[in-house]
Amino acid sequence: MTEYKPVLPPDSSSDDPEFSSSHEESQPETTRTKSVWREYTEAIIIALVLALTIRVFLVQAFKIPSGSMIPSLQIGDHILVNKLAYGLQIPQDCEFEVALLPVTCYSSSMLFEFEKPKRGDIIVFRYPEDEHKDFIKRIIGLPGDTIRVQEKIVYINGERFQDAPFTQRVDPGMIDGRINPRDTFGPITVPPNSYFVMGDNRDQSLDSRFWGYVQEHKIKGRAFLVYWSWHGQGSVMEWVRWNRIGKVIE
Image (tube, rainbow, N blue to C red; front, side):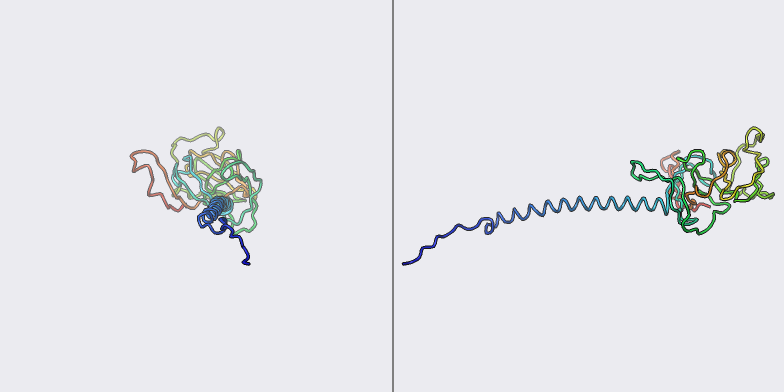
């Protein structure tokens, strides 16, 4: 006798090409979608970490909002500040907040010192009377210097400071030093680890004549470049100060 063997229907899950194709394609699509979102998330996190690292340790951008540093810096100048100018700083007294760059630090300690701030350097620092604000001024007095201002003329250690090439005095009048220290001030001696700073626009600057010294650990860095300058007045072509873009700050 011939043995009977039943014929089984083909396995649709393994032999049907249409079923196999649709099933295999659905899985990679979901995986690809998750992979794309993961790549975007990782890229954003890495970009934020890099931006925060550059801002805290290397270079930070600032905008000039006032005219206290005219003629050296104009209102609307966008500048870069070298935070490695004097050494590698470790931020201290930091606060965290919900923001794109969520860390604000109010002082720093020097891990590796390259050099000391010099007379004539234009520096950005925490404003002593409100450390939520950053100020920019020029260093005039170093630790141990004796500073005196007599009828708008600055004297350092008894000698007249030659500041004419980078300053302006727009008010011809003189203010009595007993009323206001703008035109007659001192003499004072700059204490250790501190600096006496002034704005180049001598008659229109709120500086060390009014609120005292800048402590060294409050200095954020030295300004070195104007990367953009926006005037916003006149014709459209005059809104940008093209001649100031790329200007080295001295």
